[in-house]
Length: 190
Image 1 (cartoon, rainbow, N blue to C red):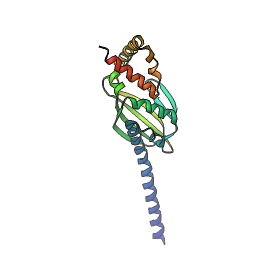
Image 2 (tube, one colour):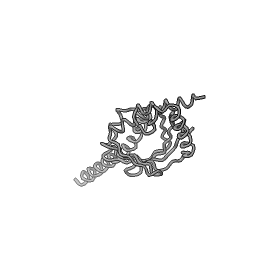
Image 3 (cartoon, rainbow, N blue to C red):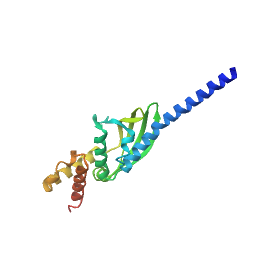
Image 4 (cartoon, rainbow, N blue to C red):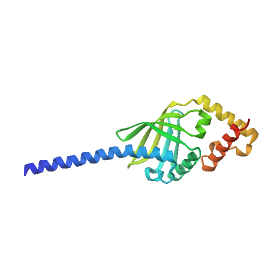
């Protein structure tokens, strides 16, 4: 009888440990899914891993924005126009958060920054849904080059194609199309 009780307790403990280990790995897998969805511009897939809303925070610039799922899908549509490539350079789970190092390049970033941007992020969860993505530190981001190229583009478009003005802050698919058109017109100006 005593052996049965001890064996039962050991089995219960073993199952609980496996279940907790699976739960721990789930967050890592969800984070990988997130970047895969961003990389593939999977508008429908994003809804399955996000909470009702998501907060995006950039610590270095003290910027924060809260998105509903619908608004985040609109942002993903904006992002997809530039044909992004996201790469996970490092990823690890630490307790209930996932820490990552990400590289991103797309047509917009290549024009403004001339190379991939690399940053560290922390992903936070609530009930295995992503609720917060915090960009804590840029490792590769030449702010001067980015702003110089952006300002040259804005000034040139303002003088030559004022009908395209407003694309910089219009994070919808149509805003991204105007942004891309502005870049193409600028690059072909010679």
